[in-house]
Length: 199
Picture 1 (tube, rainbow, N blue to C red):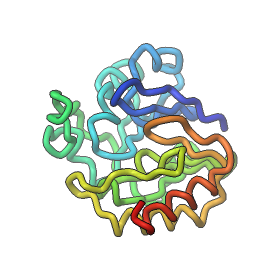
Picture 2: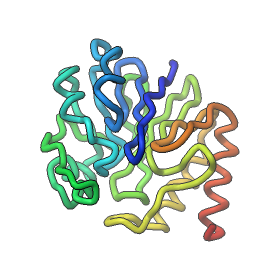
Picture 3: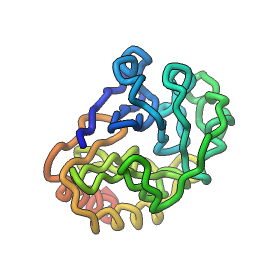
Picture 4: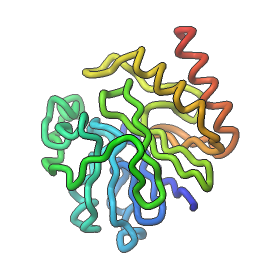
């Protein structure tokens, strides 16, 4: 299935549309408008405000369910947990419609629990296209998410990236920057090598 990028601007995260799923809500309502009738689920890759800045607007436009891992669910309603204060803002104030966990499948996207950037970070994997929507776990240039914010954990992030190495990945669709649309396995290996070497 095609993974459509809705680029984030400035400090706000990319969003992606895959069939009936909007992944993250860091892009403007105008970008979501074209897809609003198809979107049934909004899945958040983790608790940080830059990935949910337009969540309230996206829910109003689409009526979609809001899904997040249990360990990060408080970020939807808590300014401190979401780091919203770092942006001079407030958390969306919308409790999740559904809690998701490792191994769940939402509209053909498999939830992969990848803590490290936050305690409840997830990636989403489409086995057919071999596309990985990685949030802030890994980036398209082979970088990886920071682990110095609350609930970040370097050892957990290393283990999560190592877990991703077991998947057959062509594209890495990251939370910030340009996605890598091919050679995703190389990207994952680069991120793993970098973090284990302390780069």
